[in-house]
Structures are given as C-alpha cells and as structure tokens.
Amino acid sequence: MSSNKSGTRVQCFAPLVSELAALGRLMFQSLRYSGYRDICTFPQEPKTEDDVSLVEKLRAAFTDVAGPDGVLSYPELRDILNAAFIKEFAFEGFSRETARSMVALMDTDLSGSLDFMQFKKLWMDLRLWKSIFKRFDRNGNGTMDAFELRDLLRAVGISVSNRVYHAIVCRYANRKGEIFFDDYVLLLVRLSTVIETFKAQKRLDDGRAAFDIEEFTRSVIYI
Image 1: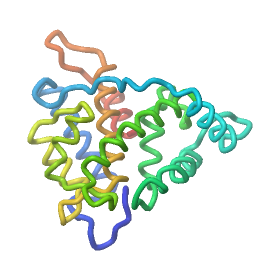
Image 2: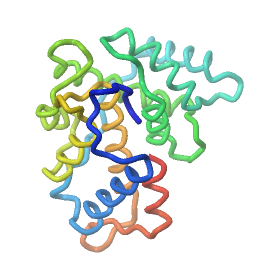
Image 3: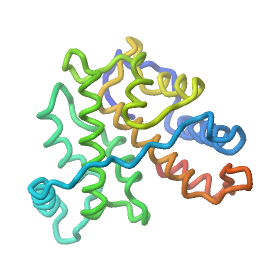
C-alpha cells in the first residue's frame, strides 16, 4: 500500500484485490452509467515552461540511474524521486506502490518502464503537485487535513462529486483525518490515470465511455 504508518491508517479497505475491485466498480459506475459531467471535471495540462538547466540536470540524473537500456523501472524511479523529494519536507519517501502507479500513469506504450520524455513529464507534474501540497501543509510536517482536500483538488484542476470525495477520504486519509504526501501523490496519480483512460476511450452518442471486459480489466489492473 501507499504509506506504512502503522497505527495511524484507517483500515477501511481490504487487500489489493478487493481494492482494485472497488476502484473498478467506482470507475465503471461513475463513468459508464452516471455520466462524467457530475462526477469530475478534467484537469488542464500544467503550463510549466521547461527550464533548460533543470532539464539538463534531469537528463543527467536519468542517465546515471537508467543505465544502458535508457529507461527507468519503478525501483529506479523511486530512487531518483526519493533522493530529490526527501530534502523538501518531513517525508519518508515514496512507497513502492506509489512508484508503480507513477510508471503506469506515464507508460502509454505498456513497456513497464519510463523513457526520458515520460520521466520529464512526470517530474513536471510532481513539481506542480508538490507546490500545491505545501500550501495546505500548514505545519510543514508532510501532511494535510482531509477536509481541505476539495480545495486542493480544485487547485490541481480536478473537481469531484460527493460520492467520489467520500471514497477518496476513506481510502487515502488516516483516522486523524490527515493525508500524507505519499498518499496525496498516489491519489493524484490514480485519479489522473482514470481520467486519461476515460478520455481515450471510445464514446457513445451521449458522451459516455463504453468498455468491454478486456479494456475495463486492463485499465483497472494497471493503475
């Protein structure tokens, strides 16, 4: 799972298979039957101009870790991101589950790894998400209050229904109503993946997306 904060996590979800099934039902019901307009609005692409110096540093770090194959696996991605983000604030590092989901978000060719352009896009998104999270991390301790999540999501460019919001809080907040940075990133990565999957899917006449069982299973499993 995302963060390993024993004693502080809300045990409101079952093992991974049950979690995927619940996520699948939510995605299917929300996007296929209910229509998407009252469920969520799609985020705008971040308008972040590439900084030449930053891109050069990113490429150097990418090359050092990726090696001769020129791609990052999820453990390699996790190493790069943890080395950079742990310095930012109180944060124990990204979990393996979050790293896997980051790869799935950017891995449009289903290779199980990221090339440099995919890594750079992820980095730019993470930089934007981090700056927004810091505005809601009042104490600088790497957490935010779940009741502020709606405002935070709007700042990112995502608006969700009450039903989806309740599911998010149950899944990603602890019993104190706190959301850790790693869980926040995992949430945004999975929301973005679901939204992009929906946008790329064939549409019915009324604008809803239709999935056959194979398409639906693949989209839910690799997230």
